[in-house]
Image 1 (cartoon, helix red, strand yellow):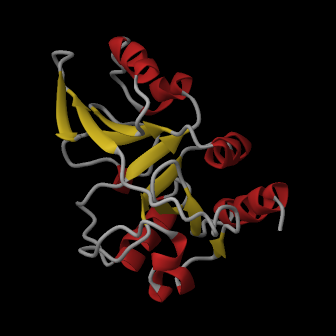
Image 2 (cartoon, helix red, strand yellow; image 1 turned 90 degrees about the horizontal axis):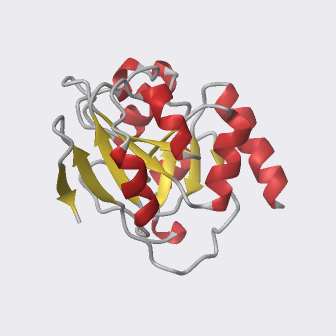
Length: 189
């Protein structure tokens, strides 16, 4: 299967509120429409994860951040441009996302993907994607496609073919919280 067909198949599933298993710029992820609460609930159920445990939103471009947070600090854009490791930022004031993607305190985790496949998928979809590691809650995030549990693979509507044979072990993103005063707190380096 080629890259474009993979994108088309994934888009069909995303538009219908389904779940995909896809490679990201970090680990393999479970994804869905981040604006569709029913789709998001399916991921929580598949992972056997409590709703209160956050999942992140992937965007293709930092210019999209103001659509999904009410308080995008302009300093963050300079910081994003200067980092090379995939980094998820926790923002205050999440908005225009499924309610179950926004934490009780109003925060939301957003990462700008550098992965070409993810960028193309998000741009064609026109909405942000959920990205959470492809594992049952409490188990380690799989470093390779072959490490993904069969229960996860059988629980999604589409498995992206792109990069399944990649043997470069991946690791989760860094997590940084953008505080109300503009300072940063490193949660996971």
